[in-house]
Image (cartoon, rainbow, N blue to C red; front, side, top):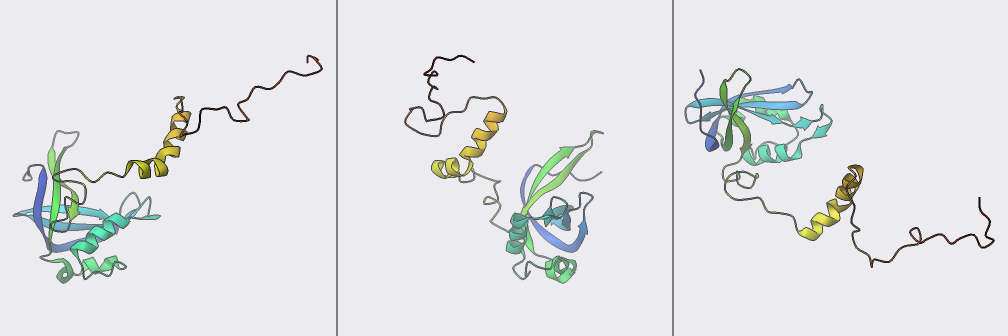
Length: 178
């Protein structure tokens, strides 16, 4: 049975072992072995997502912060043990339980030393977007999504007057009915 670690952020060191492969989902992934104290854990870092069609810029930037000598264009660089061995990082450990009731301590995220709180975990909350910027970028998308679910849509602004499309159609002046 494997050693369980408490959920949290830990200092870790790369032991020099890595594998670069295409996952069953078709994503280019680097698997590193890291030492958390004297416990070995695997850290999986997807470099491409969505079946290899979308680059994972966030993950690449995290790895570049850990490995400043990496040029960010050749993942085979990680396969040379001397490039990664003894590099320090921080890992976020979370325990998961499988269908059989077995609990495992998994590396959920990896970051450069001192950068774990910037990655959106650790102490404190990540900085929020400005309200105006948030509304400008996502407001229309949320209104459109609300319309699909049948929720009433509030106008984003305006003066409350009816526009041309909303005005009543006048009755036929000749009085003819259809």
